Image (cartoon, rainbow, N blue to C red; front, side):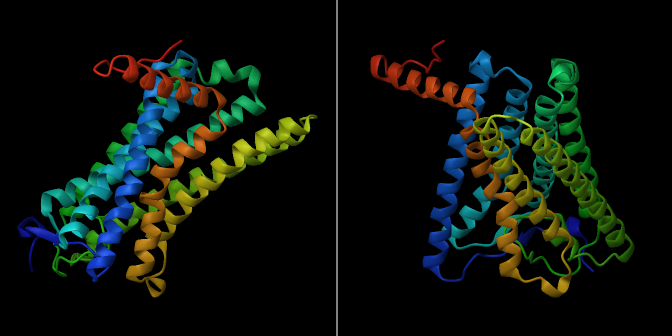
Length: 323
């Protein structure tokens, strides 16, 4: 029996055995990660620089962009490195750090999406109470609770997981270090059951958030249907439906990946599902949450225009945001 503390490295699951497909995977992930970095970086800059976006939704968008950047920077670079150099290894410390950070960012994203839905619910269904329910102090407290919960959950799960003896080899059935796949290497029955219980509780919390989001959107849609203007209804639906679709994709695929029965599990299915909740949302969230936000689009336009103007007039100067 080999204890996990003496395991020097883990073997990640390769996307393909053929060299051409490995390079295709590298370039695909490079494009996705660059798009996510650029889009989320623009949102961070726009929210920070434009005072019109210093609102509860802008504040939560800033935090969401941070979780998206953290999530994609945690999983994608190592997968790209392995595909480029035709390797599968990740060090023990690197695997621990990857699992820990991923739980923080994905957990924080679930709660942030729930809070952002609550923001829309209050804005549409209880507009007179918006300033009271979502004041600056309340928003700061909610954001602090989100990050603290993500950190404590990650600390608890990773500490329990990496304290278990691992005697089933070192090959993970995933292209990044994920706690459920590390647990499959465990030979401690009691520790395995304890950790599975923690994961089930985490998934139940995610499902609880999803139920709250669906319930909130039902109330939102009922309020929207009472809007007399057809244009107003169309605008509200076109804003809310993409949000709901993105939240459904993120939470449903993440929960399915961790709670699906072993009988339908396969390496290819696990990879597809994991990409849908760990790689796709960070790239699409900026697009979904900015396309229908006119203030954010105006701020991004000012930011990009200011950068180009300053680059033309003085290439060595920093970008500015015109007011």
